[in-house]
Amino acid sequence: TVSGGKSDARRPPELSTRDNVARAIYTEVKEGRGSPHGGVFLDISYQDPEHVKKKLPSMYHQFKDLADVDITATPMEVGPTMHYIMGGVRVDADTGQSRVPGLFAAGEVTGGMHGANRLGGNSLSDLLVFGRRAGLGAAQYVKTTSGLAKVDEGQIQAAIQEMEAPLQRNEGINPYDLHKQLTQTMSTYVGIYREEADLLTGIKKLEELKSQLPKLSAHNTKVYNPGWHLCHDLKNMLICAEAIARSALSRKESRGAHSRIDYPNLETKLSTVNTAVSNDHGTMKLEQTPLPQMPAELKELFASKDPKHG
Image (cartoon, helix red, strand yellow):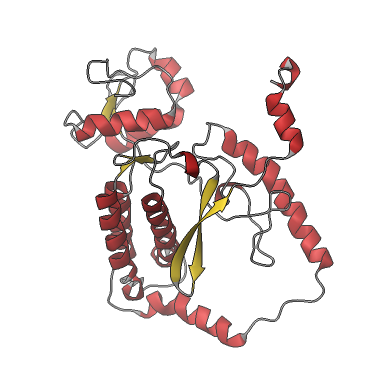
């Protein structure tokens, strides 16, 4: 159900938030009322066909071309998937600079902007505002930095060797197989609803997948070889996946898009902290860090009852 108990209607409102709709779909599937492929049916066939094609041209053509489903006449199967990562690199809000000298970030790469649950449409505003700040911050950093940083030649050669290794393996693990296992692991154990046993199982499986990275093979040319690119992306994907799983395990509450079956309520003492993840000599370290203080002008704005500020 979207809200309420079993006696309430399970039909969600016409325009509910995506997190509530995702939970509703998950519940329907989990309780055995899902569609044949593990989702639910979305029916917009009552709308005028030309209106659907005009408003949803990409969706219409994707279903028609890939599944031979005419969504103007037939219900379509849909299901929730990962859409946006609200965590990310910690940066200075004014300059976009991280704690790594010379590393600037903005948009979905960064964390802290959207709190526990992003509002629809806010990601574009985030990118425009903080992308500009990060660009200006990076330009100022370059202006005030004298000379080029020295790069160790040994590190360069080691990086080249690591990047080319999958190309040189005639046999090994297909990166697409590993990627499929990663997505299945996250969906099953670190998905919409979470609990300790699943999270622990997920972390164990992620460690197993991580051990397969040195065996990845993309034996082919460097030219247009997306499998080779995926070999390197998987390393970062697994780091992000582990950070998400361990953070979810440590945060024993439900807040925003983070829903724990075993901890369904808000925990007051966690309302003023972020979960920060760092690399401690090859081990993932988690700590709770205080939220930054809200600037006085923002406090005044939120406290104001002036309609011009609303």
